[in-house]
Image 1: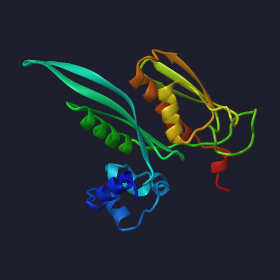
Image 2: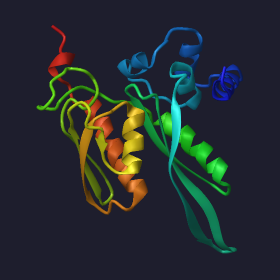
Image 3: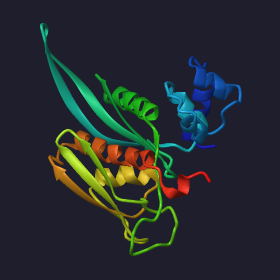
Image 4: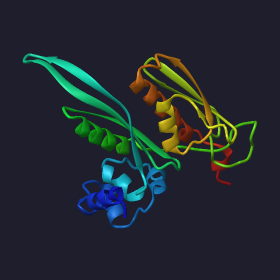
Length: 214
C-alpha cells in the first residue's frame, strides 16, 4: 500500500458522517458515485469522494498571492486552484485561501471534491467514429468571467491540443483526444480553469439518444 493510499485510509477510518448522504454510504445503502448523481444528492463532505472514488488524483493548477486592505494594514494570503479526478469520467475544481501555501492547497482539494461532477465521454469526431470513450461525444462551450472556451471532439491519437492547465483538467476527467478554442483573457488562469470545468459540467446536462429509456 502506497503512502497516498494509507493517508486516504486513515482519513476514511477517522470519518464520522454528518450528513444524510454520508450516513447512507456508511450503512451501505449507496456504493457508487453514479447512484449519488442519479438520486440528485448533494455532496457536502469531501470524505464521500475518497470513499466512492479511492483512486482520485489531485493536481495544483495555480497558486497566487492575494492581498486585502484592512484597518491594521494589508492582509496577505495564498489562493490555490486545485483540480481532482479519477481519469475515468469524474472531475472537480476548487479553490482555497490560507496564510500558508500547503493549507491553501488542502482547502482547494476539499472544495474540488465537493464540486466533483460526472463528465460524459464518447467519440464525437467525424474523423474517427470508433465508438470508444476517448474524447467528447459532442462540441461543448464553457464560460467564466471574460474567458470562453470550446471543446471539440478529436480522433484517436490526436492528444489534447490545449495549454498545460487545460491538459491537466481534461486529463483528470479522462479525456485523451480533443481540440480547444479559447476566447478572452485566457492568461487569467483561474477564470480559464473554471471555464473548462463549466464546459465539462455541460456534457452531463445534455441528454443523448443513448440515455433514452425505451
